[in-house]
Amino acid sequence: MGFLRGGLVLFILLCSFEKSFGSRKTRHLKWDVEYMFWSPDCKENVVMGINGQFPGPTIRAKAGDTISVLLTNKLHTEGVVIHWHGIRQVGTPWADGTASISQCAINPGETFDYRFIVDKPGTYFYHGHFGMQRSAGLYGSLIVDVADGETEPFHYDAEFNMLLSDWWHQSVHHQEVGLSSKPFRWIGEPQTLLINGRGQFNCSLAAHFSNTTSTNQCNLRGNEQCAPQILRVLPNKTYRLRIASTTALASLNLAVGGHKMVVVEADGNYVQPFQVEDIDIYSGESYSVLIRTNQEASKNYWISIGVRGRRPQTPQALTLLNYAPTSASKIPFSPPPITPTWNDYDHSKSFSNKILALMGSPKPPRNHDRRIILLNTQNLIDGFTKWSINNISLHLPSTPYLGSIKYSLKTAFDNKSPPENFASDYDVMKPPVNPNTTTGNGVYMLPLNTTVDVILQNANALEVNVSEIHPWHLHGHDFWVLGYGEGKFTKEDEKKFNLKNPPLRNTAVIFPFGWTALRFVTDNPGVWAFHCHIEPHLHMGMGVVFAEGVQHVNGIPNQALACGLTGNRFMKTTQN
Ligand SMILES: *[C@@H]1O[C@H](CO)[C@@H](O)[C@H](O)[C@H]1NC(C)=O
Ligand SMILES: *[C@@H]1O[C@H](CO)[C@@H](O)[C@H](O)[C@H]1NC(C)=O
Ligand SMILES: *[C@@H]1O[C@H](CO)[C@@H](O)[C@H](O)[C@H]1NC(C)=O
Ligand SMILES: *[C@@H]1O[C@H](CO)[C@@H](O)[C@H](O)[C@H]1NC(C)=O
Ligand SMILES: *[C@@H]1O[C@H](CO)[C@@H](O)[C@H](O)[C@H]1NC(C)=O
Ligand SMILES: *[C@@H]1O[C@H](CO)[C@@H](O)[C@H](O)[C@H]1NC(C)=O
Ligand SMILES: *[C@@H]1O[C@H](CO)[C@@H](O)[C@H](O)[C@H]1NC(C)=O
Ligand SMILES: [Cu+2]
Image 1 (spheres, rainbow, N blue to C red):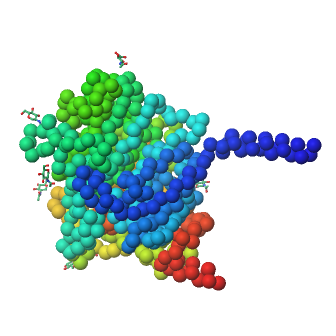
Image 2 (image 1 turned 90 degrees about the horizontal axis):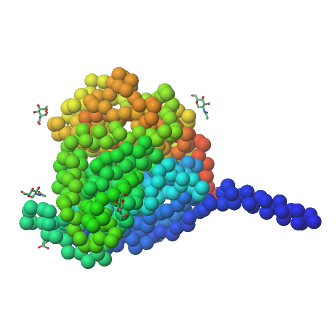
């Protein structure tokens, strides 16, 4: 009797457990990272692949799931880490995958268990975050569906995933040496733009529409590594395109010939739906757009991606929207959509300003506790070209901050707090009067439960009348984008902040000679990188580090600490 009753209670407990947590899974993955031959753009090269794939495998999970990636470094001579871009890592800051910040790089032959919860549905991706390994091809998609029983606030019949990147023929090692040489050698524009790791160099899928005889028509059978993935659709349906950009450099614009797009998600957050002909997407961003297949089904349509914000020297990336039952080999009747002029910033700003939070999204606190103004400048150190933030070019320490701050290892990095503003007489419209700057690795220490405003202030680079686009990405958080403006930010500009429905994002761009205002609340103990997502810019020092309530972080795995000064400490404690 007692046994039966006990059994019944256990049964009821199990049922209720199933109900609340039953759908939450741990998804176990085993990955090997290695260099391999691949032909991303029909020209064979060396890429950094995962389990023999490029791009790496797509992770698909449901909100609330735990992801466990047992990552083994099969590179022979360098460390590796992987960052899960857009995942906030609440409670697991050591799994953020930033070398020198959240963990020690994983040495050749070693394995690290990245274990974290994906708490929010959305379109995300992952990528290397050590040296310039993202440029070497270490990336893939991470898609989080709504939890069982939940629904998205929009309807669609099916979806496609489009991970966008840019590709150079020169090796990443060659690129890194060039960037850190005197005089500096710029990497130049990419040879090819890739969609899901596929592009075509020295031939065009749409050569017929070109008036130059130098453009060859691609001659692909369809099974090549560089053959485009065609989006096969049925008429009169709604498709969700999940678009993410992990480019090293290029700002992109995407359009679907003959079809309008309705933007519904940005960086894993729902936005108020709005319709556009094309979207701009910067490195580090993601969007979901809906398209309706309401065009003539007897034709195919181009999907085209082109470069913005820099004088383009890279052909458009193309693929086809193929309506069943039309043959995919049928060339569309009109040329691919034309990318808006590279320096038509009004077009870009108009798009950015349309992005607003969906009704019911969390609203920002009305006031800030602290305001950090970050001036972005291009500089020189002993003749080496750098990027700096408030006159400091970030040079990461050998001991990761998470461990060194947790264990108060004061000699691990510069304890002086970096500047929170810049000289009021600095003219952002002119090249720096004195271009000289210094390297540093100080940290902005942020107490918990603080509302922080960050004003990103763009400026003139070293060359007269040149100011570049920088997409800034924050780890560990989404921030509200309160506004964009021209010239130097002033106290007056604060009145124009959008506190009503600013979008939550993890990446926001600063336009040339402009500023962007962000707000976030320090509610996630950890050490978080905040940096320009352009790979060579970060490599040249364009980033800062925020430390947030690190004393509340418990359970850092020893493996994340096994280098630098924390490495010594870890060895001592295990010997005792
Ligand atoms: C481009 O393709 C043409 C024709 O297929 C070939 O002759 C030429 O060598 C190629 N150029 C490069 C740079 O690969
Ligand atoms: C090719 O030339 C025709 C006629 O001059 C022009 O209408 C068309 O826009 C051109 N196409 C491209 C891709 O330049
Ligand atoms: C799609 O819908 C349109 C209008 O609703 C209709 O005219 C057309 O026949 C439909 N096409 C197909 C293939 O169902
Ligand atoms: C900048 O540093 C260089 C040495 O790297 C020096 O020659 C130059 O005078 C400095 N410029 C200024 C304006 O201080
Ligand atoms: C950066 O540092 C140099 C050298 O100390 C100084 O002359 C210059 O004014 C500083 N620039 C800014 C933007 O603060
Ligand atoms: C955070 O700070 C606000 C006011 O600054 C206070 O009302 C609130 O209780 C604090 N929350 C926590 C969790 O400490
Ligand atoms: C920079 O821009 C200003 C204003 O548009 C112009 O007067 C000046 O000639 C430009 N200078 C150079 C070097 O291009
Ligand atoms: Cu940048």
